[in-house]
Each structure stands twice: as C-alpha cells, then as structure tokens.
Image 1 (tube, rainbow, N blue to C red):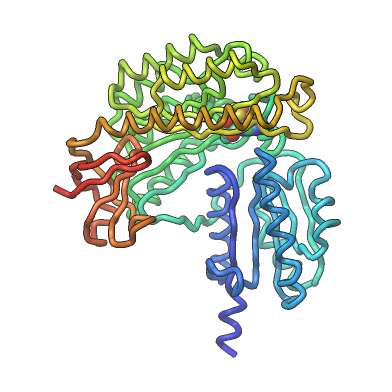
Image 2 (image 1 turned 180 degrees about the vertical axis):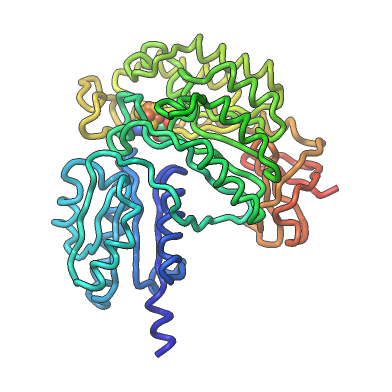
Length: 445
Ligand code: 5AD
Ligand code: SF4
C-alpha cells in the first residue's frame, strides 16, 4: 500500500525553450513538492506528467505534439495518469482548443500568466474528475512567494522582470509573455539573500530585456542601479544577467559590470543580423555601427569580457549580401558563443506576412556557413586560455564524464577537470591545459 502511494506521488516535468521557461518549471516543481510530490526523471513511473512548452520556433512546437501523441497509449493503460500542458505555446490564440481536439486525454491546460494556479487546477482534476483549461489573455500582477525547486544547489536563476515590449517582427514572445513588469528590488534582494542562506554562490538575473528593468516601479531605479544594489549582498560570489537588448544597453550598465566585483565579465547581446537593412525590418532599433560601438566599448572597459549572441538566418528578404554582412560581423566581434537559429515563421507576427520568404535550402546553406563561422570564432576565443589559470566555480560532475568535475570561469567558459566531489560549490583555481571547441580542460592547482 505504501509502495503504491509512493509511486502515485511522483511527477515528471519536461521543459522546452529559454531560461525563463526553465525558471517557470522550477516554480511548478516547487509547488508540486510543496504538496507532497517527488520528482522523477522516468516518465513511466510518474502519476503527473507536465509539459512546459515553447513557441518561439516551429520545431519546439512539433516536439510537444510528438510527445503528447506518445502519451495516448500510456493514458489508455493508466487512466489515473494526469497530463498537464502549459507555457508559451498555450498563450497562442486557439492553441488550447486545438490541443484538446487533437489530444483529448490532456487533463490540465494553463498559460504563462496563471501558472501560479497550477495546484488549484490539479486539485480540481483530482477531486472533481474534470478537465481544466484556463488561459489568461493578459498578464497579471507579479505573484511573489512561489516556492522554487532549483535544479542546481550552486547557482540559481532569479527573474527580475517579466514580458517584453519590443515586438521584433519575427518574435511571438511579446504576445505570449505580455508587457514588461519589473519585480520590486527588495523582492529580488530577498530572494538572493535566501539563496545565499541555502549555500548558493551564483545567480543569473533573468528578463527578456533586463536593460529596461525598473520602468513602472514606484521606486526610481534602473538596471544599473539594481546591479549595484545586488553587488552589495554579502555571500553571493557571482552575478550574471541575460538578456540585454542592444538598443537599451547603457554605458552605466557596462561600467557597473566593470566596477562591481561580483558582476561577472560576460554579456549576452543578441545581434540577430549584421545587415542594417534586415535589422530595420526586424524592428530592432539599432544598426550595425551602434552595435559595434557597444562591443568596442565593452572590449575597452572590460578586456576579458566574453560576448555571446543570438543570430537568425533566413529572415524574410535576407539577400546573399545581407547574409555576408552577418558573417563579417561574426568575424569582427569574435563571439565566445552564439545561439544560431533558422528563421521560423510564427503566426500573427509581422514577418510571417512578408512576401519575400527565403527558400528552405537557402536558409539551411546559410545556417551551415554561419555555424562554421561561429565555431571558428569560439575555438579561437578558447585557445587564448591554454596555459592560463582561471577561477572556476565547481557546479558538479561533468556531463560527459562522471569521473570529472565541471564548472565555469567568471566569464562563463565551461571547464572540465579531475577533482573530488567535495569541491562542488567551491571556487578553485584551474590551470587550463587544452582548449576544446566547447570546453576547456584543466587541472586544479
Ligand atoms: N525564428 C527564429 N529564431 C527566432 N528567435 C525568436 N523568434 C524567432 C523566430 N521566429 C530567436 C532570436 C531570439 C532567440 C531567443 O530566439 O534570436 O533572440
Ligand atoms: Fe522577442 Fe525581440 Fe522581445 Fe527578444 S526583444 S523577446 S526577440 S520581441
């Protein structure tokens, strides 16, 4: 009997998409743990299966459909299984009904704005045996105090603002995440202090555009001000943030990174394209010259700052010449890493209506060339570390080789090295012996 109860109390959660979604899943997980469930990574032993979805690109959606399809047989065998689906995809018009039509065995559907109500929905399904579908069209006030079950015990995400006001013409995020809302600085500070008390050493501040932090708050504070306040919190060793929109990255923020000892030397600055013409149609509000002046400012003020980015190829109307501009920008900046994407048409976005869509084979060919250019830049950036000694925050066993440890440098480089598991959570000095394309190999000194 006890055994059966234990089995019933397990949940499985799968997350697609960005860090924001990962953080939401940590909250969903926290709420489930709060009401007595334990997490399992084995979908077959779960009594609740929850999919937290992403809709930024079409392939993220297709993965969700595939996974939901596979659950049909599982649900037939085990009618008590509760299947929930949430996240950005559910915020799209008509999507929830479409899901219910195709996968009628789904029990709970909710969106990004009402995920805090998940325990209530779960309770209704369990006690009333009903199917629950609730999506809020609009963002609500920020709900504080939701328990968070973090993946790591060394580093954690802390959301500082929700939503986006930018409406880049390719992007669905503003439609599914609503308008920008900032958390109060004291809420953010308290969350970080709580993390410190639990032994956390590093936080990454999250927002779609952290640089517009503070708008609409009673208190007069901007992102640079928030960074300086967080830097004063005792016990936290490292602070990172993402994402910065180039149009809003100020000199004040760059100087805060330079001057504050806890702020890590790493800036994620999505460029999307190297062509002024494409940037304009994307509605990005900066041109290549402005972007390069930011890069040069960062390099001048913070010499060992890593710079990472997001790039889209095959945006409507992108010509060979536009694409060459992107390649030349990648070379000029010398990125330490880049997320590269093939443009994906998204319903109800302006770019989807544009007539000059780029053919698939052209997109793929450009994508491959872009990946090669990025890899070249990453390898070159990593080589610089050979022979150097770096400070590494040890995060845990290495992903590919459990006998080794992995951690990151202040500026975000992944380092693998031999060491005892008791080093997890500690800062150690590692001498880099070899640079690989996606990691550095070294030894503790
Ligand atoms: N197609 C391809 N990539 C996209 N992104 C956002 N929308 C799309 C789209 N429709 C990328 C952008 C953004 C990152 C999170 O996802 O590069 O910065
Ligand atoms: Fe999407 Fe642009 Fe907002 Fe980023 S800034 S979330 S790309 S609309």
